[in-house]
Amino acid sequence: MRKRPPSAPVIAAAPQNQLGEFLRAKRDQLRPQDVGLPPGFRRRAPGLRREEVATLCHISPTWYTWIEQGRTQAVSTETLGAIATGLHLSHAERAYLFELAARADPEHPAVAGSAPHQLADLVKVIRTPAYILDRHWDAIAWNRPAALLFDDWLKGTGARNLLRYVFLNPRAPSFIVNWPERAQRLVAEYRSDTAAWRDDPVRQALVDELRSASRTFDAAWQSQKVLSREGGLRAFEHARSGRREYEQFTLRVAQHPDLKLTVLVPDEGT
Image 1 (tube, rainbow, N blue to C red):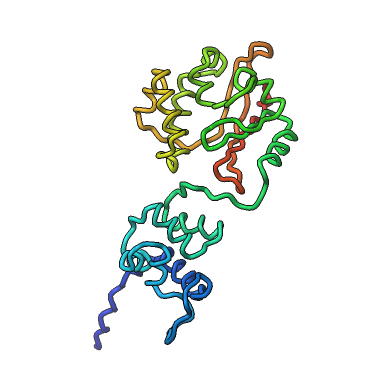
Image 2 (tube, rainbow, N blue to C red):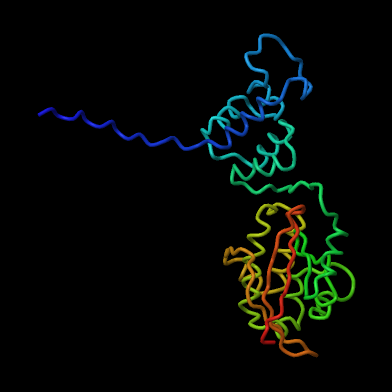
């Protein structure tokens, strides 16, 4: 009886280097004259050489080669930004580059799309409380239902920062139902939401101010908790209209990823 030959060993497939494949494709698509380089002679391929890309990005040829070959995962946001500039990436391509590298883009470059005043017009047509927060959690647009609900926060002039209101306004703890838990959660959400701007002086000044002025904020900040900004049931004790309950939805604005649209849908029971 003939013996079967031993089966071939199963070889695990090499992990796909999507970042490197993307960089190679963009390098091959560029011509030297596209980036201000002389065309040169004896090019085996129409695209740029790795050494040329490294020069354009102001990084070493060895480091760029390692990145393209997938030999390192420790690519800083500064290096990614330099590569995006050197390869003349579009806004969408830059966002994709950072996504592949699993890094948050600290600049969030502006893209074509809705202007802030158009977003304000959008908020106004929503019939339930709605507002837009910027990267520092300052309210930059809101509608009349939101102004009526959050009169202590949204009235007056000047910056209407959500964290300053929650932690520094003496009426906030009685207005926000279950304030201790909500306040701690807000700090964890803010830490997560602004991680890409941890070196931003405005962010640092706000954190320092709140830590100095509020023991609750300081304790929550020192806990190092991180949570995503999610929706869910929100309840408020309004001085004039009584208890109000809402389902909260927080949406990221596609054209302006540093802006957040929050919509409160009244609970049917209230």
